[in-house]
Image (tube, rainbow, N blue to C red; front, side, top):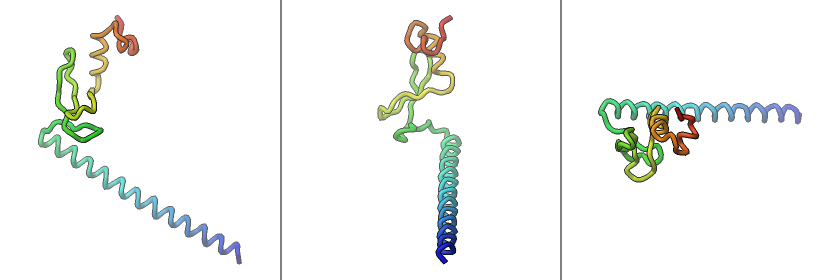
Length: 104
């Protein structure tokens, strides 16, 4: 009798786990859809990107000939693909240039 009880308990635990996994998968899917819709809306409207930390608007600023995105609330500077290498090429003698090995 106790082995039947153990099998029933195991079956219930597996069912609970499956329901929990399905719930979180649905939540993840809904969150991804919201994020995609928000991104598409910002691209359609043409708004500036937002800070990944605080969500405030990023403004474009020229730093040593490279346009970077700066958070209005001071969270930091955000670089697009290739911008770090451009800055490092101009700063061959700096630690950044040495780190990335951009010396000519």
